[in-house]
Image (cartoon, rainbow, N blue to C red):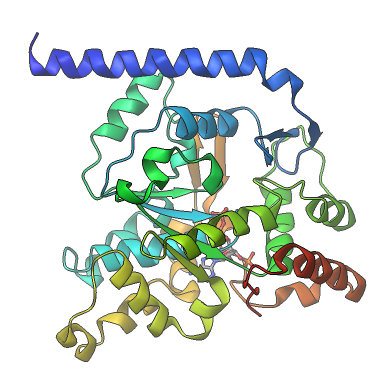
Length: 345
Ligand code: PAP
């Protein structure tokens, strides 16, 4: 067999193997899972302790868990939804590729953050055939950059083992801003058959942990604890810290991904240029981010403009009552107690 035929055979075997795993889980496990009202899709299912929307997203999570083959050079931008992945996709891409592109002619200006930085969770179902997705996954050049919402505990050991080489950048955001951002986003992006969710209902579900990839606190703590154990493997950042002091945090990001800024770059203002390029003001005003939809799978397409709303810290004050805020703060105090983590403000 030629090497090309070998490659095709290997990808076919992988696709078949994943199909079998997925069908088995769908048949034996999915029907037994607790089910709750969804925010954007009809339902959320509690799978391995986290609330995941069926079916393409769950399919993607199962793929990552059981069949994804990481490379030691892979870099994952891990987030719970609405904590800043659009912004950090832009920051990481621009930092990683800063010597490859002129700022005046940068791919972020013509492709947008999501087009440059694939969401791993949806990768397997972006094509009609698993084999096409697997083939395209394998053909990505190293270092591969992936965004993901998959909880740390669901990643395979081959990605999380200290010896694996893979690195994770995790972004955490104040849960009150996450709730408001998620509620507004999901109501705008929900599929037609799902009725709008009121803020009161969203709040109750969020507090009970029933939000996409929730409980939010468990998602954050999984990555936080792993970052304490393996700081060279997981860089844990807060949305609010990046807002308050972007220069310091973009420098940290660059060092972590193995692309530290040289003294000359610092003198020439390279850090500030990247911050400007990726700012909310700049990205949200680009035609590419204002029009059209981002297609994540054959059935999931989201208006690009929905990923840019206000990009501020503390907007929750315009939506949540004092009682709601107190209840979320109390849950945060209880959940984070003894962890050493405090949410940004
Ligand atoms: P996702 O999980 O659907 O990918 P994600 O990008 O993580 O969403 O979060 C969206 C939030 O980041 C929005 O917050 P808001 O609703 O409170 O406004 C969005 O406005 C904000 N955001 C997007 N781009 C930027 C940016 N360049 N700088 C700061 N915040 C941003």
